[in-house]
Image (cartoon, rainbow, N blue to C red):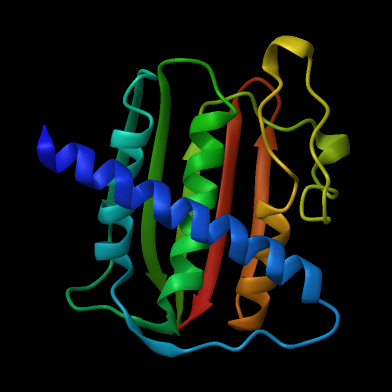
Length: 189
């Protein structure tokens, strides 16, 4: 129990730092390049840590969060660990947030040639096709019915796209309203 409380407090602080960093990134996006501190990052370890944190953070919402790791042993990507963690945490948290109780979320880690892929899939509410091109825009939020409104600022996906672009990667979404979404990030190895 004590470990969970400590983990929840750490998660809260990391989330607060991530939100502040998101605001700063969005505010300076067109004025300055992002300064990356690239080191070898163990993506699998990062995914498992985020899974553990989100299971605690969303402990009151019935869900299943799994990690499917198909990466070779010892696979790392040269990236800024803090920013990459913010991206993956944002995608997982969105999957949990924009879904009903009992949602199933999977983080799939794969490698294709010289690219690493992180895909976060869910069986949540999905995003109507007409809004999918807009979701990476600053302050944009998908219009929802009153009973599905969630707290947010419309900066998480903007930040994620900016960070992944700065790493030389890509981020995209495939989604069907009422069936769920798959957000895929690819990064050069």
